[in-house]
Length: 185
Image 1 (tube, rainbow, N blue to C red):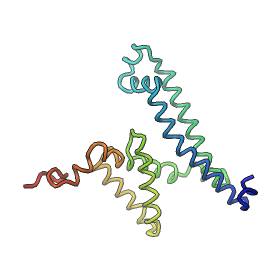
Image 2: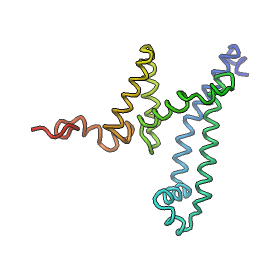
Image 3: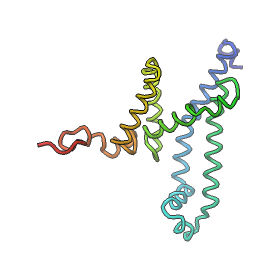
Image 4: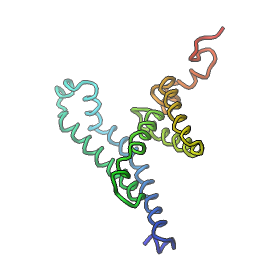
């Protein structure tokens, strides 16, 4: 259907379908997280995070709440990973379980953007792909620069770039009277 609609060959049609599915999932994932965290179920999860014993004494079934989160995350991870494998055109251990693609890059994105926030990974993806686009010509130095940026972010903004504007960290580091190297006379 897409092939006939856009008058393209099969690989281009697959790319078009993958793009729209990925866009829908990219918009739906933060919305899903927001809706879950703002529901009674999210309140139960916050209670379990703060004190599991206290949450259970208030009537929260921590086992079922945790199981529900694991099932929801597993389903979301599968739905988000499927377009990647669809774009690859093949399913193999190399494509599905690449350490660089599935571990290092994802951890980098979350650390740069901010752990524990909805907008943090979005900011991390923007920073990561911008750096990847502009620094990919440097070969292995590109990966060293990514690592150096991650270290700098962990040292000066441990909650990530996404949290800097909300907490005032950016203004604290860039104002002369309260910069990271101490007060100035």
